[in-house]
Amino acid sequence: MRYPQAIQNLIEYFQKLPSVGPKTAERYVFYLLKKSPETLQGFAQSLAQLKLGTKMCQSCLAISDANPCPICQDDKRNKAILCIVANTQEMLSLEATGKYPGKYFVLGGLVDSLENIGPEQLNVKALIKKIQAEDIKEIILALSPTVEGETTVLYLSKLLKPENIKITRLARGLPLGSSLEYTDEITLIESLKNRSQI
Ligand SMILES: [Zn+2]
Image (cartoon, rainbow, N blue to C red; front, side, top):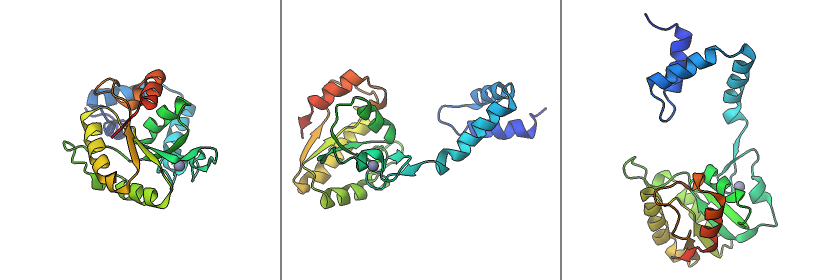
């Protein structure tokens, strides 16, 4: 016997999520079946609004509810420092420290040879354009200390060298292989403060 089509459909959608296999997908669906119609309605509405209710900031390429985002709009922030992050989640982790006075740029991922993600899939062209258009004095490469993060740091430091801007990276000492998104604030503050020039 197969599950009713409505259940089967949702199982298939859950299976599209990262690290969700068929058994976990089934468990999610049967868990949701026990919820009230109102809860499910709210869930469905949030999903439907996910794309409609968010914008990409055209200046830093972060996901925000406004374009330009509140950080790019903030004139009190130091425009001369640009912190390059892999994604919006990591940008928000750094922002949560409250210790970074500059602006950000979201790369949209990291160079990953196993997943066939090359620099051309990242927002590298937009980054070069931004650097050439704005008066930036320092670029901080704030990328996770993983193989992908290191490969990307190497690539970007070579690429940006001709721009004649000071390039720094977060201090070593971050746990190797960890993601910045899950690094605690104190460690992040320290690695920002002790950043080193490339
Ligand atoms: Zn922005």
